[in-house]
Image (cartoon, rainbow, N blue to C red; front, side, top):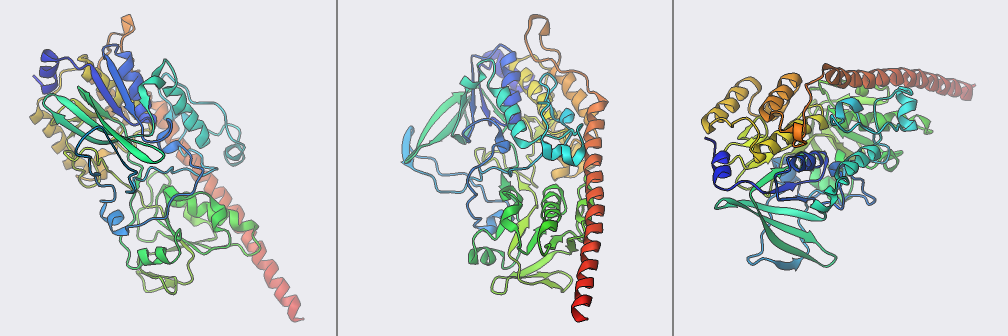
Length: 503
């Protein structure tokens, strides 16, 4: 008998805390509520509303500091807890990386069909920007549509009353057979701290918050000489700030591709179109999107950075060459997994270990995760995980394996995927994983309206997922060819002007 079943026999789980009101938290709320067995569901969200990383910011982010901690993935440590609670304390000044990762014209890069939950269709509205790029049937959506979608999931059926906003979960610890959750609410002048108690905790806080920037000699000094000259892609707020500037974009994956292409393509209207320098040579391009974006005629691709010189603003490269007079470095280098509120769950190799099926914490199945995966059909995988977690807590899921069996599942996966980020990647085994969770979760008691029903996996979701990527690659190729032709014409006219000037 699993530990959680033992707990349910002695003390049924009636009070559940959910951490986060982004897409994973939003669907977790509904999955828990539909089990109709919990007396208390409390959701804690540190931002001012639902949406997670899809919430936009009106203000520019604070400049980056402490690059050593960003490089070592230690930039979001646990904060000191007041000795006596409740308490009022001075406002916390430790960076928490809660700022948005969207910019004004950001669009999704995944087909809406692959993103939407099974019972909640994605909004049909399409931006003119996306239609101009991909045609009237564009499957992509503006970030505001995504935020509105998540907001709609939370603000229904009275769920909004379950959420405490501007509330950060600072510590989660097991005391006896209860979870003690320490909370902090930001005020104008001071922070208010208190504790609440639960039988179970669902972590749906996401992992696109804390930027990872590799160690580069001279980088922090470079930033200090002109604050804001070094940013992570999550702090990118649009191309206008970089007009006429010399920019180096670091990274070979999605965000770096989007930003480098955006800066290069839209500089064509400038009197002197800018060249964007991309650090991609020798690095692995994203498996979905490839390298087409980096083939733009105004993108120069380079090998890794060896060091930067703050005084001369020179970026030195691994092949002995250099890029002088650089104004900005933008790092599209990914994120670090952090769960500072759970010191008993140490992150290893940028993944959360000891999770059976990426959901159940093996050491105590009353702690569950929704969203601790990558490449999982974005939002859709959260629904399957949330329903499985809710069924476990309601006592309606298939019996959990023994701790030894759960550990064996993880060990076998490590042999195949490795003990790093690839461990948590669902691609390409979508159907296998979705169907496994559906069977483990069971049907619930849907005949009497209890439990959210999971449909069978549909191959067209995977098809739409992949075709959306192909659509973007074709767009990049088409625009690159057009810009290449424009560039040749511009160069030809320049030569003709120079020849006429000499006559």
